Amino acid sequence: MTKLFSTLRYRDPRAAIDWLEQAFQFQRHFVAEEAGEVVHAQMRFGDDMIMLGPDHADDKYGMHSPLGLNGTNQCVYVAVVGDLDEAADRARSAGATIVTPPYDTPYGSREFSCKDLEGHVWSFGTYAGEPLA
View 1 (cartoon, rainbow, N blue to C red):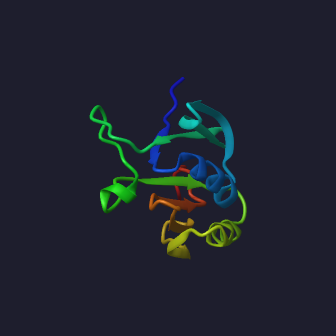
View 2 (view 1 turned 90 degrees about the vertical axis):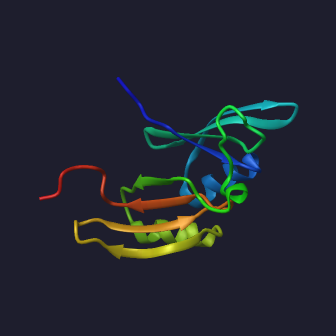
């Protein structure tokens, strides 16, 4: 079995964990700390998971928060089961910047996109990868 996890960097991982729970309903799965600072975290969304860690001088990987990049380097797509408009409202209420408000796509999905508290782009939609007729 193979699994794929996105890993994001945040200047304030602890705030990101709290925000992801509130805005997107992620669930804290595992948080590793060193000297009182979050060094690695795993957040669940149903059966799926993302990982996150601190933005720091990282010569090995060169990964940073969008705050340090003057832009983004990826987008995370989350397939939503349930009311997509409610998910958009919850994200907006938590302070997400809505990039694309909810809309119906020509391929049968309902989607919206937003930026989180540090500028990572998240897209949410009802399309879960199955072929559309």
